[in-house]
Image 1 (tube, helix red, strand yellow):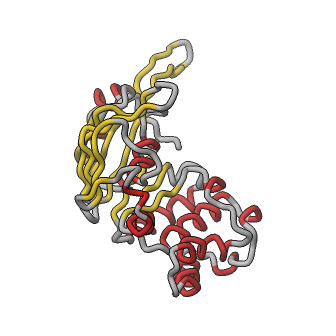
Image 2: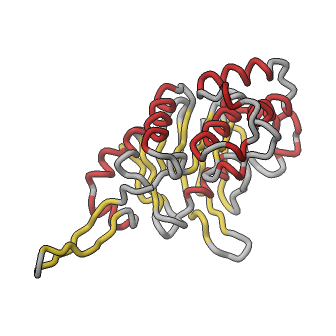
Length: 258
């Protein structure tokens, strides 16, 4: 379904983002992407969403190359945008319509879908947003904004859902709700997170990006979390001192915060 072959990307100032990355994701997989800040997690999702293009290597979706030139085909571009959806880490970056109703309807309307209104009602009910439909997004809490953004993407019924740190700004109740909701979806999902304690709830397969922007690990998440040297190499643990009266010692801790 998704195939990256030796993909590399650097920003305009020459700063590397991804290096020589190869992977395959099958339909229906739930994949968790881990790594320290700046390792390339968000860039990977943007490449998969066709917002950023590799400098080297190839990206194929269902066997077809995803390139800047390919997006000049309007019919292909519309089909790809409908099928591959990205939830940004900051929901405010995605909200720009007058009301919640308009936010959810925006994608279906842009694609000319005749049942845009029905899709709004369906996903507003599914995500508990019915009472918020006529409110502007600035009136909403962070968790409610996240739900609106998710509803707007799901209204397109995408085949692939890319989520960049979706639990980073959620309180415990909203986090639990989102994990349960995602586990019930049949959609292929690729989720980035820093929270190692919740990562196994988001998928069985784990990709770990190293600080040199290369793929350090691709396998079962349970195996990755048991490999302390791997987590140290990926900068997914931290060391600090514990004080016990006049005595102190230090050891590694996993990053279990958002």
